[in-house]
Amino acid sequence: MTLVRFDPFQEITALHRQVNRLLEEIYPWNGHEDYFFTPPAELRDNGEQFILKFWIPGVDRKDLDISVTRDGVTISGQYRQEEDKDSDYYLAEFSYGKFERHIDLPVEIENDKVTAEYKDGVLTLTLPKVEEARHKIVKIHLASDDKTVEAKAETVTNSADKQG
Image 1 (cartoon, helix red, strand yellow):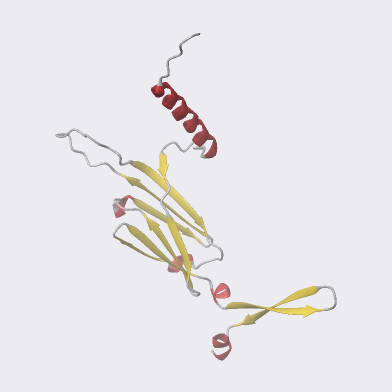
Image 2 (image 1 turned 90 degrees about the vertical axis):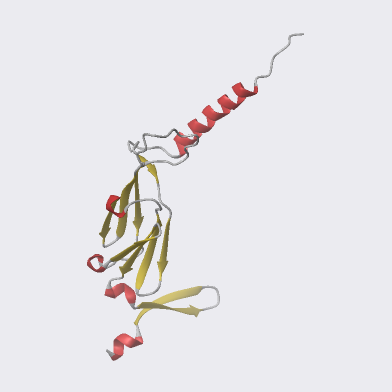
């Protein structure tokens, strides 16, 4: 009978390699090795406009670049490391480098009227919708016969638009 030694560190190292291979297959870098981070976003619709928020704490506003088209928003920036040559790190878990995020919008916006606010690490963009998308209401009428139900759509303008 042969005695085989169990080396838990060898097993952990093999598992680590397998997880890294799996993650590379799921999230390929596609040539963007310098982009390490995708900031989380929140997009809300309040009828007249979209409110888009990005959570990017620790980024200086001079390191942010915001591009807005009629159908999407792209932000990019960089986390910079504070230079302190007089100290050694005992723990370093922060990541530094470039990031980029693009959000496609469900309807077109008036990109020349976008406003931005950056406070407490949250970038908030107010994106007003184009006039056609603001007050478009679609009513669905159901007509039925014995075996089928048919839906007919009708576009109705907002009553405030009819008065003004």
